Image 1 (cartoon, rainbow, N blue to C red):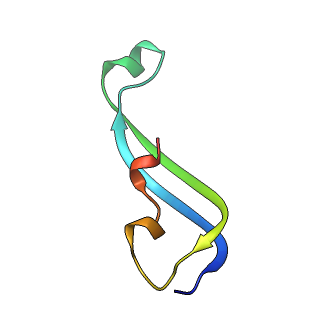
Image 2: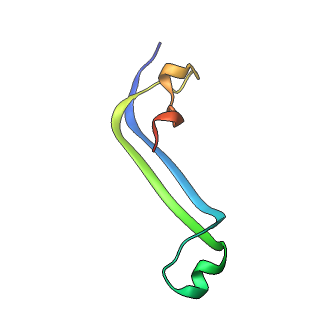
Image 3: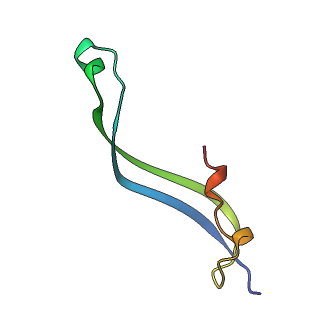
Length: 64
């Protein structure tokens, strides 16, 4: 198995959803549209590009 040293980055762009948020009265009347851009940089680590074994990929359950 070949190991490659690199950086694993998860990028979300333009994720849209409705959320209840705000502090002003008109904001509290109902859900408001939200758009999120986010990047999770896991830093330098061993990458295993040739397979998709669960131990070699990003475990989404650990992202909170």
